[in-house]
Picture 1 (cartoon, rainbow, N blue to C red):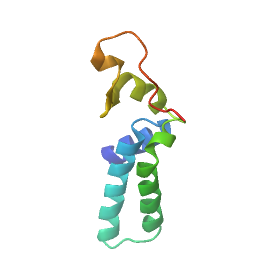
Picture 2: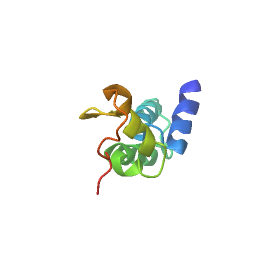
Picture 3: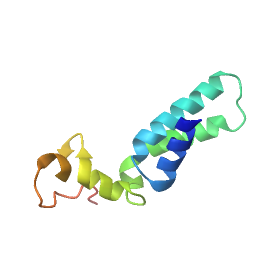
Picture 4: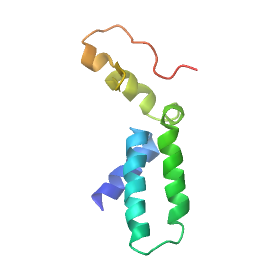
Length: 93
């Protein structure tokens, strides 16, 4: 239950959207495999879309600031570089 609440809060706030959607999709997949289908295939499809669109989803939530601070696998953020200068924006258009 705690995992479901934390994943839901992360998705609502837009914190680490791709990671939260991955774990939410995994939990949804487990429910589907247990035999309770109902709307779960639709929710799983939406979770996959969120994982694929994490960069765009970051514009609308806390990811816009968190990913600039923490960075991404291909570009470390201010927290790990030890500099005070603002790094190149991760969400360039």
